[in-house]
Image (tube, rainbow, N blue to C red):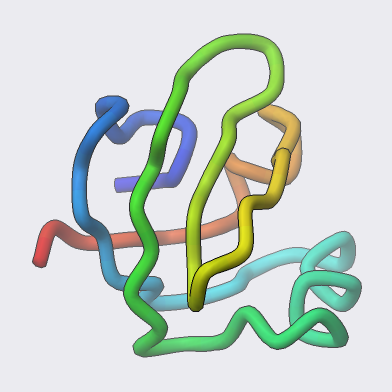
Length: 69
């Protein structure tokens, strides 16, 4: 499933960053196998990883493939 499809409050593992906009996520340290928590849904989703919160818009969230931990 994509990050956009996951429910808020879920612990997730990034399986694949698939898209040109994902380059910036990689530069910020998001990568495959990283565990994240999706804190909120909406126009912009809030995710927590390694003690840092990040807002991700739906277009970018559709390019991040995740699985439940």
